Image 1 (cartoon, rainbow, N blue to C red):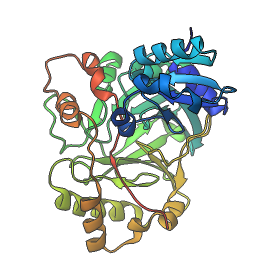
Image 2 (cartoon, one colour):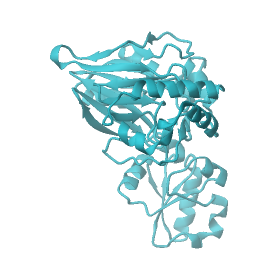
Image 3 (cartoon, one colour):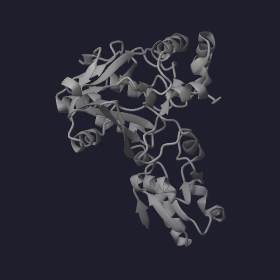
Image 4 (cartoon, rainbow, N blue to C red):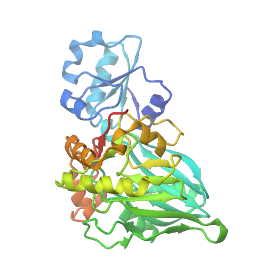
Length: 364
């Protein structure tokens, strides 16, 4: 039986080289989270529906962790199909990364994409130094990005207290012996450095500047980061298909009002050509290999109606639209607050599943 890694599957998907992706989990598992374009046919039903699978297709089978997909691939091989199982299943898919880069003023922004979960993190570098923003637990990825460009990690930032994935910020800051910056109003129970008024990379005429912008709404301590006056890292405040959900703290209308105020206080005076770099992308946002995922603020103003709505209309919409919560979000928040005795790396199973941190807006 042939197998393929989740990373190799992503490469094939990006090159449009997957003709048939067969998800053999239950319909409930599939509905909760799946790869775009996959066909669902539970393993128990597979022998009775082989006529649904094109004989000419190269079939890639996937499940939750790899066992069911291996059985499916073996069954298909016995019936003379061209079948390959995806090792580690959706759990492995949740940890597939790639990256893209763009120059912004005197800085460079490297976007590190956790493609299976739609999580985006960043390394912002200039003059031999860099800041890491919203890292996952895969610390070596950020260290390798910095080392490959000759950058020294000088600080780590979380734009907010994450509810959909485990933050690697504390671990990375400890490993590099650098400050960890977090918004002052986040309810964490460990020592960290208050968010500064300005983060500077380099010295003299080669200085690159990052300005933190307090942006309560998705969480009370949410922060956006203005890089070189022309790129806005929005965390979970503004997405390319909506805004951050305000309901996870069970105070949806209050947080939605804060979200509205934060968005308008920090973006109303910004030019249309400011680039927006969010902390997540939803399934409706196209991510291309080697191309940084971003939109201009002007394009979002034109496409996302809630960004231009009156306050009362925005609050009513944002507070009422979000429904399904991120899987295990309460346990993930507790872990990111520092209230779990287990090491964060031992809790990685909590992360499997979609991010669900956005209130998605219908485009104009």
